[in-house]
Length: 88
Image 1: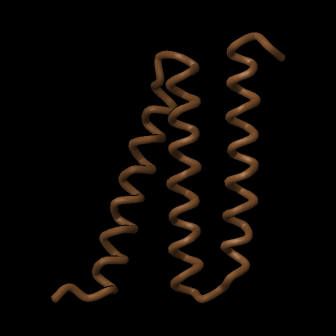
Image 2: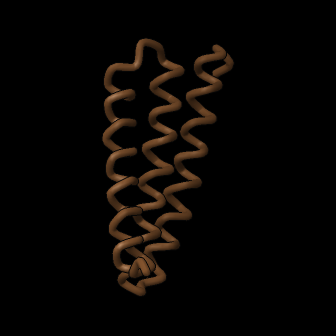
């Protein structure tokens, strides 16, 4: 039987790998669209890591931080998408 601690460790390791891969795509992205998608992937991965930390530390304020961070990230992606379409 796999312990819950092992599952959390594996989840954090996978999120760290995803974070590093998204950082590479963000820095080397050939186009602005690739960088926007990588940025969105970075924020989603960071939200998952914040949520895992919140669950492990039993501090609900981190969930509020994750929600605000997610909303700001969403608005940022929308603004950049409008800029790419030359609509700003």
